[in-house]
Image (cartoon, rainbow, N blue to C red; front, side, top):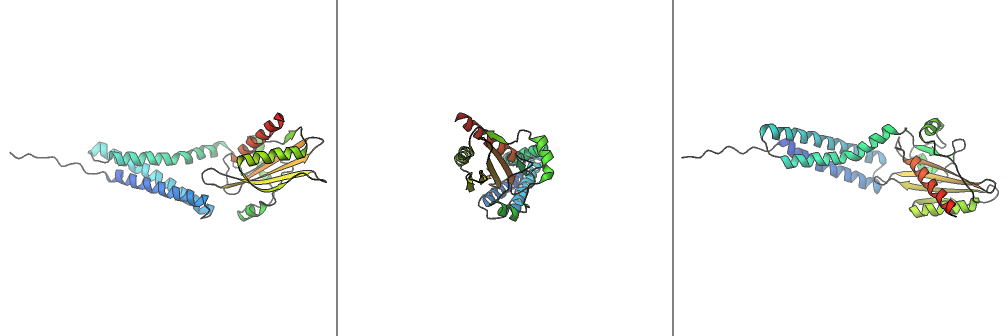
Length: 257
């Protein structure tokens, strides 16, 4: 007697393509991060590559969903490729999703200053900022947004001389291993010190330009800080965070002395 065997179910094409697209998304994103960190391509191209990787991650998720539906309804094979594409796609969307939440919760600012009436002005960093499309000067239109969103960003007054305050600030910057491009200690007749440096974002290594101004004020030191993104239209609260963290550290060190 002949034994009849049912044909084995075929592979789900969407499930297999989900895995392939997810792998491609990882490759595109990795290439974009490497190129941005090594400055092999400009920021616009690197961000376009990141957007492409996000689109591919979304496509992988959709293909995985279709593949899982086919597996459930038709008995096709491909559970592992579908789950791989779904997991990787969701993983790649975690950080963009986090940024989307921050963009919703924070105002669209790229330049923050503790002194809105007389913001510190960039000197050596003004050239790369101009090349990136930033005109000189502080964007006054953002002052009202900053006041409402970050009321704690204000001038730091220390019970120290300007020279001592300058050394504390410089030591704290060096402890973070940030790149100082200008360091001018307070000197007569103005008794004003300046520190310009750059802080890189952790993943894409985009530069944030920062200047700290130290002024002598009757046996006290007034410390003002300005932090500005060199690229992009939204800092996602990074610049205000840098100011609050660094000036808080300086205040704590000064109190310890």
